[in-house]
Length: 305
Image 1 (cartoon, one colour):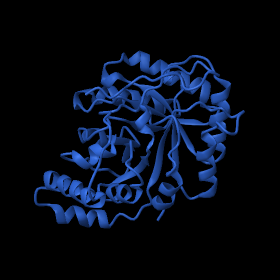
Image 2 (tube, rainbow, N blue to C red; image 1 turned 120 degrees about the vertical axis):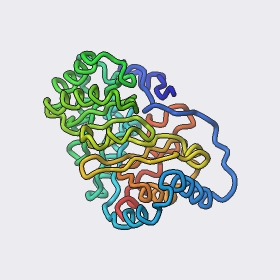
Image 3 (tube, one colour; image 1 turned 180 degrees about the vertical axis):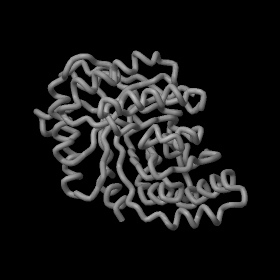
Image 4 (tube, helix red, strand yellow; image 1 turned 30 degrees about the horizontal axis):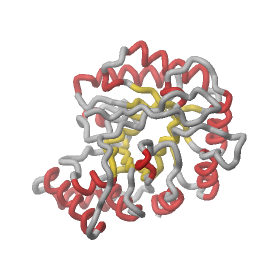
């Protein structure tokens, strides 16, 4: 399933390049009718029925025992136009963090698809602004589902380390992650490369339920085990779900959100043990990551409740 689309340049100020969506599973027009809350309950029930097969009560007990706040993982793929207050999208995230100091926000930044060898001063300034507000920043690197040459990926990790680590980048986001356990050593080696350069916060993005070894092996801090449209979640929920561990948490990313479904999605995330979330309505233009959802502050508030 192809999950990486290239998009137009976001800003004429810089040759930021073509920016991938964190891998769309599908891109379909949303036309949802009927009772949304009922359909979320139905989606959750389908997932339970297919995954648990008689062990529903035990999982519900485990979920009820979880009392940690949810956290935000936002793909911040817009250009940091810090000189122009009206178009500096990153400032919205910074302001929300300043308004809710207890919130944990991780931002993924993405100059040139993570394939660069020179500093962009605007990104340096933007990264510093995020970090100064208490937002963790990780750098984008793609892996082509394990088919990209290891040295090419390592060179991109090295660029993040040499150019933006001093500005505050503290981890690597590996996009297009394979779900096949035969690639586990490949990703384990890449994780070690990142951590050896003090880019300690590692995120993998298969975008769907993956082989549980990717979670149990402790090679990542976060695994994005569901990234899809709101419609797909309602109509075709996963057949099974990964289980988080003490060291590796799960993330849920929803694009093309239908209206204001924050309450339902928060509930869904808690029930299926997703600790990191982000929901946006911006996917209808083909790239849900080039702006910030109008519901972000609401998501932050409800994630903390």
